Image: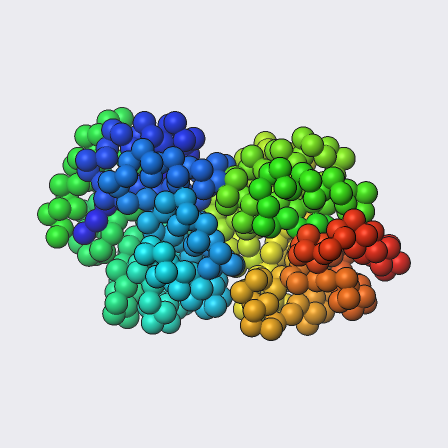
Length: 211
Length: 211
Protein backbone atom coordinates (compact mmCIF):
# COMPACT_ATOMS: atom_id res chain seq x y z
CA UNK A 1 0.00 0.00 0.00
CA UNK A 2 1.33 3.42 -0.98
CA UNK A 3 0.67 6.90 0.43
CA UNK A 4 0.14 9.97 -1.77
CA UNK A 5 0.14 13.56 -0.55
CA UNK A 6 -2.24 15.78 -2.55
CA UNK A 7 -1.35 19.47 -2.69
CA UNK A 8 -4.36 21.57 -3.64
CA UNK A 9 -4.29 24.98 -2.02
CA UNK A 10 -0.65 26.05 -2.23
CA UNK A 11 1.60 27.99 -4.57
CA UNK A 12 4.96 26.55 -5.69
CA UNK A 13 7.11 27.78 -2.75
CA UNK A 14 4.48 26.62 -0.23
CA UNK A 15 4.29 23.24 -1.99
CA UNK A 16 8.05 22.79 -1.65
CA UNK A 17 7.91 23.67 2.03
CA UNK A 18 5.19 21.10 2.79
CA UNK A 19 6.87 18.34 0.78
CA UNK A 20 10.23 18.99 2.48
CA UNK A 21 8.57 18.42 5.84
CA UNK A 22 6.93 15.09 4.99
CA UNK A 23 8.97 13.65 2.11
CA UNK A 24 10.31 10.70 4.14
CA UNK A 25 6.78 9.45 4.78
CA UNK A 26 5.13 9.63 1.36
CA UNK A 27 5.58 7.72 -1.91
CA UNK A 28 3.91 10.13 -4.32
CA UNK A 29 3.32 13.88 -4.26
CA UNK A 30 0.28 15.08 -6.19
CA UNK A 31 0.15 18.46 -7.85
CA UNK A 32 -3.61 18.91 -7.45
CA UNK A 33 -5.94 20.32 -10.07
CA UNK A 34 -6.24 23.74 -8.37
CA UNK A 35 -2.43 24.09 -8.40
CA UNK A 36 -2.28 23.04 -12.07
CA UNK A 37 -4.97 25.61 -12.90
CA UNK A 38 -3.14 28.36 -11.02
CA UNK A 39 0.46 27.59 -11.97
CA UNK A 40 0.31 25.20 -14.93
CA UNK A 41 2.80 22.38 -15.42
CA UNK A 42 5.50 24.72 -14.05
CA UNK A 43 4.43 23.43 -10.63
CA UNK A 44 5.04 19.79 -11.66
CA UNK A 45 8.46 20.68 -13.05
CA UNK A 46 9.46 22.62 -9.93
CA UNK A 47 8.48 19.85 -7.52
CA UNK A 48 10.06 17.06 -9.60
CA UNK A 49 13.31 19.06 -9.79
CA UNK A 50 13.29 19.74 -6.06
CA UNK A 51 12.38 16.14 -5.08
CA UNK A 52 13.71 13.82 -7.83
CA UNK A 53 13.33 10.74 -5.61
CA UNK A 54 9.58 11.20 -5.15
CA UNK A 55 7.06 10.18 -7.76
CA UNK A 56 5.06 13.19 -8.92
CA UNK A 57 1.42 12.90 -9.99
CA UNK A 58 -0.05 15.64 -12.20
CA UNK A 59 -3.78 15.80 -11.49
CA UNK A 60 -4.76 17.13 -14.91
CA UNK A 61 -8.18 15.41 -14.93
CA UNK A 62 -7.81 15.07 -18.70
CA UNK A 63 -11.12 15.19 -20.58
CA UNK A 64 -9.82 15.55 -24.15
CA UNK A 65 -6.60 15.37 -26.17
CA UNK A 66 -5.34 12.48 -24.02
CA UNK A 67 -2.13 11.85 -25.93
CA UNK A 68 -1.12 15.50 -26.18
CA UNK A 69 -1.70 16.32 -22.52
CA UNK A 70 0.18 13.22 -21.34
CA UNK A 71 3.09 14.21 -23.58
CA UNK A 72 3.21 17.73 -22.08
CA UNK A 73 2.95 16.43 -18.50
CA UNK A 74 5.71 13.91 -19.21
CA UNK A 75 7.96 16.69 -20.50
CA UNK A 76 7.37 18.49 -17.21
CA UNK A 77 8.49 15.41 -15.29
CA UNK A 78 5.20 13.86 -14.15
CA UNK A 79 5.42 10.15 -13.31
CA UNK A 80 1.65 9.63 -13.12
CA UNK A 81 -1.05 11.63 -14.95
CA UNK A 82 -4.80 11.59 -14.27
CA UNK A 83 -7.55 11.20 -16.87
CA UNK A 84 -11.29 11.41 -16.10
CA UNK A 85 -13.35 8.23 -16.07
CA UNK A 86 -16.21 10.22 -17.66
CA UNK A 87 -14.04 11.01 -20.69
CA UNK A 88 -14.33 9.21 -24.01
CA UNK A 89 -12.65 5.81 -24.43
CA UNK A 90 -10.51 7.33 -27.21
CA UNK A 91 -9.17 9.89 -24.72
CA UNK A 92 -8.23 7.22 -22.17
CA UNK A 93 -6.66 5.02 -24.86
CA UNK A 94 -4.67 7.97 -26.26
CA UNK A 95 -3.41 8.78 -22.77
CA UNK A 96 -2.37 5.17 -22.08
CA UNK A 97 -0.60 4.88 -25.44
CA UNK A 98 1.42 8.06 -24.89
CA UNK A 99 2.20 7.09 -21.28
CA UNK A 100 3.64 3.75 -22.49
CA UNK A 101 5.87 5.62 -24.99
CA UNK A 102 7.08 8.00 -22.29
CA UNK A 103 7.44 5.41 -19.53
CA UNK A 104 4.76 7.13 -17.39
CA UNK A 105 1.62 5.87 -15.68
CA UNK A 106 -2.06 6.74 -16.05
CA UNK A 107 -4.52 7.05 -13.19
CA UNK A 108 -8.21 7.28 -14.03
CA UNK A 109 -10.22 9.43 -11.63
CA UNK A 110 -13.74 7.97 -11.30
CA UNK A 111 -15.25 11.21 -9.94
CA UNK A 112 -18.93 11.49 -10.91
CA UNK A 113 -18.96 8.30 -13.04
CA UNK A 114 -22.61 7.15 -12.92
CA UNK A 115 -22.13 3.32 -12.96
CA UNK A 116 -18.75 2.96 -11.34
CA UNK A 117 -18.51 -0.85 -11.46
CA UNK A 118 -19.39 -1.15 -15.16
CA UNK A 119 -17.05 1.71 -16.11
CA UNK A 120 -14.16 0.34 -14.01
CA UNK A 121 -14.44 -2.97 -15.87
CA UNK A 122 -14.12 -1.15 -19.23
CA UNK A 123 -11.30 1.11 -18.06
CA UNK A 124 -9.31 -1.74 -16.52
CA UNK A 125 -9.35 -3.45 -19.92
CA UNK A 126 -7.80 -0.32 -21.50
CA UNK A 127 -4.55 -0.95 -19.61
CA UNK A 128 -4.55 1.99 -17.20
CA UNK A 129 -2.24 1.75 -14.17
CA UNK A 130 -4.49 3.06 -11.39
CA UNK A 131 -8.24 3.46 -10.97
CA UNK A 132 -9.13 5.97 -8.27
CA UNK A 133 -12.45 6.37 -6.49
CA UNK A 134 -12.81 9.98 -5.50
CA UNK A 135 -15.30 11.97 -3.48
CA UNK A 136 -14.66 15.48 -4.75
CA UNK A 137 -14.90 18.65 -2.67
CA UNK A 138 -18.39 19.33 -3.91
CA UNK A 139 -19.43 15.70 -3.24
CA UNK A 140 -17.93 15.72 0.26
CA UNK A 141 -20.02 18.77 1.03
CA UNK A 142 -23.02 16.57 0.20
CA UNK A 143 -21.81 13.98 2.75
CA UNK A 144 -20.82 11.27 0.24
CA UNK A 145 -17.86 8.92 0.73
CA UNK A 146 -15.99 6.43 -1.43
CA UNK A 147 -15.95 3.12 0.50
CA UNK A 148 -18.77 1.54 -1.48
CA UNK A 149 -17.15 2.75 -4.69
CA UNK A 150 -13.83 1.16 -3.71
CA UNK A 151 -15.55 -2.15 -2.96
CA UNK A 152 -17.34 -1.92 -6.33
CA UNK A 153 -14.16 -1.43 -8.36
CA UNK A 154 -12.26 -4.07 -6.36
CA UNK A 155 -14.91 -6.58 -7.44
CA UNK A 156 -14.15 -6.08 -11.13
CA UNK A 157 -10.64 -4.68 -11.57
CA UNK A 158 -8.11 -7.35 -12.58
CA UNK A 159 -4.92 -5.53 -13.57
CA UNK A 160 -4.99 -1.89 -12.44
CA UNK A 161 -4.07 -0.79 -8.94
CA UNK A 162 -6.88 0.78 -6.92
CA UNK A 163 -6.72 4.15 -5.18
CA UNK A 164 -9.01 6.15 -2.92
CA UNK A 165 -9.17 9.92 -2.40
CA UNK A 166 -11.38 12.48 -0.75
CA UNK A 167 -11.45 13.79 2.80
CA UNK A 168 -9.25 11.09 4.40
CA UNK A 169 -7.95 12.10 7.84
CA UNK A 170 -5.75 10.34 10.42
CA UNK A 171 -8.82 9.15 12.35
CA UNK A 172 -10.56 7.74 9.28
CA UNK A 173 -7.42 6.18 7.78
CA UNK A 174 -7.74 2.79 9.61
CA UNK A 175 -11.19 2.29 8.03
CA UNK A 176 -9.75 3.21 4.63
CA UNK A 177 -6.88 0.74 5.06
CA UNK A 178 -9.30 -2.04 5.99
CA UNK A 179 -10.92 -1.56 2.57
CA UNK A 180 -7.47 -2.50 1.09
CA UNK A 181 -6.77 0.00 -1.69
CA UNK A 182 -3.29 -0.13 -3.27
CA UNK A 183 -2.90 3.62 -2.84
CA UNK A 184 -4.31 6.07 -0.28
CA UNK A 185 -4.46 9.75 -1.25
CA UNK A 186 -4.48 12.33 1.55
CA UNK A 187 -4.66 16.09 1.12
CA UNK A 188 -6.04 18.31 3.88
CA UNK A 189 -5.60 15.39 6.31
CA UNK A 190 -1.88 16.20 6.21
CA UNK A 191 -1.65 19.78 4.95
CA UNK A 192 -4.29 20.97 7.41
CA UNK A 193 -2.81 19.15 10.42
CA UNK A 194 -1.25 21.14 13.27
CA UNK A 195 1.87 18.96 12.99
CA UNK A 196 2.19 17.86 9.35
CA UNK A 197 5.33 15.80 9.88
CA UNK A 198 3.98 13.89 12.87
CA UNK A 199 0.66 13.26 11.07
CA UNK A 200 2.38 12.02 7.91
CA UNK A 201 4.62 9.76 9.99
CA UNK A 202 1.64 8.21 11.79
CA UNK A 203 -0.17 7.76 8.46
CA UNK A 204 2.94 6.09 7.02
CA UNK A 205 2.97 3.63 9.93
CA UNK A 206 -0.72 2.78 9.50
CA UNK A 207 -0.27 2.32 5.74
CA UNK A 208 2.80 0.11 6.31
CA UNK A 209 0.81 -2.07 8.73
CA UNK A 210 -1.87 -2.35 6.03
CA UNK A 211 0.58 -4.11 3.69
CA UNK B 1 -24.17 35.65 -33.09
CA UNK B 2 -20.71 36.00 -31.57
CA UNK B 3 -17.30 34.69 -32.66
CA UNK B 4 -14.78 33.20 -30.22
CA UNK B 5 -11.14 32.45 -31.01
CA UNK B 6 -9.83 29.40 -29.15
CA UNK B 7 -6.09 29.34 -28.47
CA UNK B 8 -4.89 25.83 -27.72
CA UNK B 9 -1.36 25.25 -28.94
CA UNK B 10 0.48 28.46 -28.10
CA UNK B 11 2.52 29.90 -25.26
CA UNK B 12 1.72 33.36 -23.83
CA UNK B 13 3.82 35.46 -26.27
CA UNK B 14 2.46 33.49 -29.26
CA UNK B 15 -1.09 33.95 -27.95
CA UNK B 16 -0.61 37.72 -27.77
CA UNK B 17 0.72 37.79 -31.32
CA UNK B 18 -2.26 35.87 -32.74
CA UNK B 19 -4.84 37.93 -30.82
CA UNK B 20 -3.21 41.19 -31.95
CA UNK B 21 -3.66 40.11 -35.57
CA UNK B 22 -7.36 39.25 -35.32
CA UNK B 23 -8.69 41.25 -32.37
CA UNK B 24 -10.95 43.47 -34.51
CA UNK B 25 -12.86 40.43 -35.78
CA UNK B 26 -13.55 38.42 -32.61
CA UNK B 27 -15.74 38.95 -29.55
CA UNK B 28 -14.14 36.51 -27.15
CA UNK B 29 -10.65 35.04 -26.87
CA UNK B 30 -10.46 31.60 -25.28
CA UNK B 31 -7.47 30.46 -23.28
CA UNK B 32 -7.83 26.78 -24.17
CA UNK B 33 -7.37 23.88 -21.76
CA UNK B 34 -3.90 22.95 -23.09
CA UNK B 35 -2.71 26.54 -22.49
CA UNK B 36 -4.21 26.52 -18.98
CA UNK B 37 -2.46 23.22 -18.25
CA UNK B 38 0.87 24.51 -19.54
CA UNK B 39 0.80 28.06 -18.18
CA UNK B 40 -1.95 28.17 -15.57
CA UNK B 41 -4.18 31.20 -15.05
CA UNK B 42 -1.11 33.37 -15.73
CA UNK B 43 -2.11 33.05 -19.40
CA UNK B 44 -5.61 34.41 -18.70
CA UNK B 45 -4.18 37.32 -16.75
CA UNK B 46 -1.63 38.18 -19.46
CA UNK B 47 -4.20 38.17 -22.27
CA UNK B 48 -6.81 40.15 -20.31
CA UNK B 49 -4.18 42.76 -19.43
CA UNK B 50 -3.00 42.99 -23.03
CA UNK B 51 -6.53 43.11 -24.51
CA UNK B 52 -8.85 44.65 -21.91
CA UNK B 53 -11.60 45.29 -24.48
CA UNK B 54 -11.95 41.62 -25.42
CA UNK B 55 -13.87 39.14 -23.32
CA UNK B 56 -11.58 36.34 -22.13
CA UNK B 57 -12.85 32.79 -21.62
CA UNK B 58 -10.86 30.46 -19.35
CA UNK B 59 -11.44 26.90 -20.57
CA UNK B 60 -10.88 25.26 -17.19
CA UNK B 61 -13.30 22.37 -17.85
CA UNK B 62 -14.09 22.39 -14.13
CA UNK B 63 -15.00 18.96 -12.73
CA UNK B 64 -14.86 19.72 -8.99
CA UNK B 65 -14.58 22.65 -6.58
CA UNK B 66 -16.76 24.79 -8.84
CA UNK B 67 -16.92 27.83 -6.58
CA UNK B 68 -13.21 27.90 -5.78
CA UNK B 69 -12.04 27.54 -9.37
CA UNK B 70 -14.43 30.25 -10.61
CA UNK B 71 -13.13 32.57 -7.87
CA UNK B 72 -9.50 31.98 -8.95
CA UNK B 73 -10.30 32.45 -12.66
CA UNK B 74 -12.21 35.66 -11.83
CA UNK B 75 -9.20 36.98 -9.93
CA UNK B 76 -7.13 36.35 -13.06
CA UNK B 77 -9.58 38.40 -15.13
CA UNK B 78 -11.65 35.72 -16.90
CA UNK B 79 -15.06 36.94 -18.10
CA UNK B 80 -16.38 33.46 -18.88
CA UNK B 81 -15.33 30.17 -17.23
CA UNK B 82 -16.12 26.63 -18.44
CA UNK B 83 -17.50 23.78 -16.32
CA UNK B 84 -18.03 20.23 -17.58
CA UNK B 85 -21.57 19.01 -18.28
CA UNK B 86 -20.53 15.59 -16.90
CA UNK B 87 -19.69 17.16 -13.52
CA UNK B 88 -21.97 16.95 -10.49
CA UNK B 89 -24.92 19.35 -10.21
CA UNK B 90 -23.36 20.74 -7.01
CA UNK B 91 -20.24 21.68 -8.98
CA UNK B 92 -22.23 23.51 -11.65
CA UNK B 93 -24.39 25.26 -9.04
CA UNK B 94 -21.29 26.31 -7.05
CA UNK B 95 -19.74 27.72 -10.20
CA UNK B 96 -22.88 29.67 -11.14
CA UNK B 97 -23.24 31.07 -7.61
CA UNK B 98 -19.63 32.30 -7.52
CA UNK B 99 -19.87 33.70 -11.06
CA UNK B 100 -22.93 35.76 -10.05
CA UNK B 101 -20.98 37.17 -7.08
CA UNK B 102 -18.03 38.06 -9.26
CA UNK B 103 -20.03 39.34 -12.23
CA UNK B 104 -18.69 36.59 -14.52
CA UNK B 105 -20.39 34.06 -16.79
CA UNK B 106 -20.43 30.26 -16.84
CA UNK B 107 -20.27 28.13 -19.97
CA UNK B 108 -21.01 24.43 -19.66
CA UNK B 109 -19.06 22.23 -22.06
CA UNK B 110 -21.21 19.23 -23.06
CA UNK B 111 -18.24 17.15 -24.24
CA UNK B 112 -18.97 13.42 -23.77
CA UNK B 113 -22.34 13.93 -22.04
CA UNK B 114 -24.26 10.71 -22.81
CA UNK B 115 -27.85 12.08 -23.14
CA UNK B 116 -27.19 15.62 -24.28
CA UNK B 117 -30.83 16.76 -24.55
CA UNK B 118 -31.84 15.59 -21.07
CA UNK B 119 -28.69 17.04 -19.47
CA UNK B 120 -29.06 20.38 -21.29
CA UNK B 121 -32.57 20.71 -19.88
CA UNK B 122 -31.22 20.21 -16.32
CA UNK B 123 -28.24 22.50 -16.82
CA UNK B 124 -30.32 25.28 -18.37
CA UNK B 125 -32.45 25.28 -15.23
CA UNK B 126 -29.31 25.85 -13.09
CA UNK B 127 -28.91 29.33 -14.57
CA UNK B 128 -25.73 28.89 -16.61
CA UNK B 129 -25.01 31.50 -19.28
CA UNK B 130 -23.87 29.33 -22.18
CA UNK B 131 -24.27 25.67 -23.09
CA UNK B 132 -21.66 24.50 -25.60
CA UNK B 133 -21.78 21.40 -27.78
CA UNK B 134 -18.25 20.27 -28.39
CA UNK B 135 -16.61 17.62 -30.53
CA UNK B 136 -13.27 17.26 -28.80
CA UNK B 137 -9.97 16.48 -30.51
CA UNK B 138 -10.28 12.81 -29.71
CA UNK B 139 -13.92 12.78 -30.91
CA UNK B 140 -13.05 14.60 -34.14
CA UNK B 141 -10.46 11.94 -34.87
CA UNK B 142 -13.38 9.47 -34.70
CA UNK B 143 -15.26 11.55 -37.34
CA UNK B 144 -17.99 12.89 -35.03
CA UNK B 145 -19.51 16.38 -35.36
CA UNK B 146 -21.82 18.53 -33.25
CA UNK B 147 -24.71 19.59 -35.51
CA UNK B 148 -27.15 17.04 -34.14
CA UNK B 149 -26.08 17.95 -30.62
CA UNK B 150 -26.71 21.64 -31.28
CA UNK B 151 -30.18 20.87 -32.64
CA UNK B 152 -30.85 18.72 -29.56
CA UNK B 153 -29.94 21.44 -27.05
CA UNK B 154 -31.77 24.13 -29.04
CA UNK B 155 -34.95 22.08 -28.65
CA UNK B 156 -34.82 22.27 -24.85
CA UNK B 157 -32.72 25.27 -23.76
CA UNK B 158 -34.88 28.25 -22.71
CA UNK B 159 -32.54 30.78 -21.09
CA UNK B 160 -28.88 29.95 -21.79
CA UNK B 161 -27.12 30.95 -24.98
CA UNK B 162 -25.96 28.08 -27.19
CA UNK B 163 -22.43 27.61 -28.49
CA UNK B 164 -20.70 25.17 -30.82
CA UNK B 165 -17.03 24.15 -30.94
CA UNK B 166 -14.85 21.58 -32.59
CA UNK B 167 -13.09 21.59 -35.95
CA UNK B 168 -14.96 24.56 -37.51
CA UNK B 169 -13.20 25.96 -40.61
CA UNK B 170 -14.03 28.79 -43.03
CA UNK B 171 -15.60 26.35 -45.49
CA UNK B 172 -17.79 24.64 -42.87
CA UNK B 173 -18.79 27.89 -41.12
CA UNK B 174 -21.87 28.59 -43.34
CA UNK B 175 -23.37 25.21 -42.34
CA UNK B 176 -22.64 26.00 -38.68
CA UNK B 177 -24.30 29.43 -38.97
CA UNK B 178 -27.40 27.86 -40.54
CA UNK B 179 -27.77 25.82 -37.36
CA UNK B 180 -28.11 29.20 -35.51
CA UNK B 181 -25.93 28.95 -32.40
CA UNK B 182 -25.52 32.16 -30.36
CA UNK B 183 -21.74 31.69 -30.31
CA UNK B 184 -19.34 30.02 -32.75
CA UNK B 185 -15.96 28.87 -31.41
CA UNK B 186 -13.08 28.54 -33.89
CA UNK B 187 -9.55 27.40 -33.07
CA UNK B 188 -7.34 25.85 -35.75
CA UNK B 189 -9.72 27.25 -38.39
CA UNK B 190 -8.10 30.62 -37.68
CA UNK B 191 -4.77 29.82 -35.99
CA UNK B 192 -3.87 27.26 -38.67
CA UNK B 193 -4.87 29.48 -41.64
CA UNK B 194 -2.17 30.81 -43.97
CA UNK B 195 -3.63 34.32 -43.49
CA UNK B 196 -5.14 34.49 -40.00
CA UNK B 197 -6.33 38.08 -40.29
CA UNK B 198 -8.06 37.58 -43.66
CA UNK B 199 -9.67 34.34 -42.44
CA UNK B 200 -10.92 35.93 -39.21
CA UNK B 201 -12.31 38.87 -41.18
CA UNK B 202 -14.22 36.58 -43.54
CA UNK B 203 -15.53 34.57 -40.59
CA UNK B 204 -16.64 37.80 -38.91
CA UNK B 205 -18.60 38.77 -42.04
CA UNK B 206 -20.32 35.37 -42.23
CA UNK B 207 -21.20 35.48 -38.52
CA UNK B 208 -22.54 39.04 -38.88
CA UNK B 209 -24.76 37.93 -41.79
CA UNK B 210 -25.99 35.10 -39.56
CA UNK B 211 -27.50 37.60 -37.11
